[in-house]
Length: 286
Image 1 (cartoon, rainbow, N blue to C red):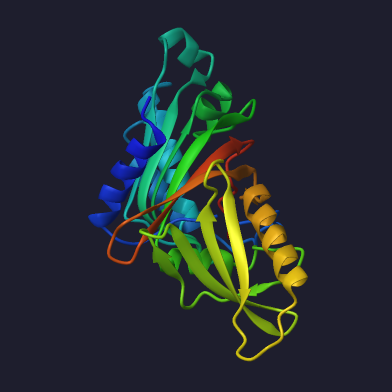
Image 2: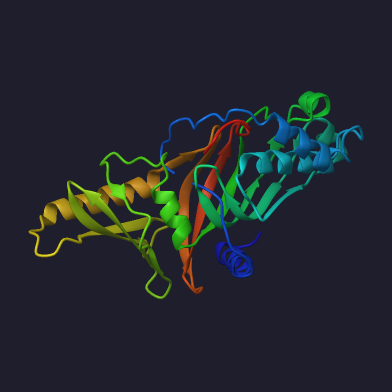
C-alpha cells in the first residue's frame, strides 16, 4: 500500500499538470434540490453506460455507473475515473466488490466547492445486485469505509471555508480572499471576522500528532488584544477543523492529516477518512 507521502507526491504531480477542483465542510445542512436533471441524466447514461447495459453484472458496468453518477453531481470536471476490483466472480454476483478507487481532477460542485485533484478508496462495497441489473443504479447494502486524499490550492481553500454549508459555532465569517500557502513554513494563512474584529488564522500541522493547529492573531491595527480570547479562539478553531464532519447527502468525510506541497502558489493535501452510507442524490446541490 502506498504511504501518505508517496500519494502526496503523485497527486501533487498530477495537479502540476492541470488545474481546477472538488469539494469539502463541517456538520452540514441538507443541500438544495435542483429543479430537473432528467434530460442531462438520460444523455449521460445513454452515452457512457450504454455499452455495458445488457451485458450482465461486471466490474466495468459498476465503474461506468459510478462515473456517470459523479459527473451528474458535478458542475465541471476534467476527469473522473472509477476502478473497481473484485476478489472473485462469486463475490461479484453477491454484490461484494473492492477495493474501489475514484480518481479525479478539476472537480467543482454547483455551490462552488472545488479541488485540484482527489483520490478516494473504500475497502469494500456491498451492492444491491438487483438494483444494479434492473435499474442500472448503485445502492449500498452497508456503509463503505476508506480514505480520501484531496488537493486544494489557495482558491480552492477559500471556496471551502466560505461555502454556504460551512458552519462554525463561533460564527466566524471567513474570507475567501488573500489565502496564502507557504510550503516552506508549512502554513496556510487566511482571514476572517469575529466579534466585529478582523483576525488572521494560521493553519499548520501539529509537530508530533496527525492533527491540525490553527493559531489566531488579531489583524486590527492599534487594537487592544485580549490574550485569553485569542488563545481560546485558537483552541476552538483547531478543534473545529480536526473534528469537522463534511457530509454530502450520505457521504461523510473527516480530517485525518495534512501536508503542504511546494508548487507555484502552494498546494494543501488533506487526508480524510470516508464513510459512504449512500450515493448523493442527482438532484441535490452541494
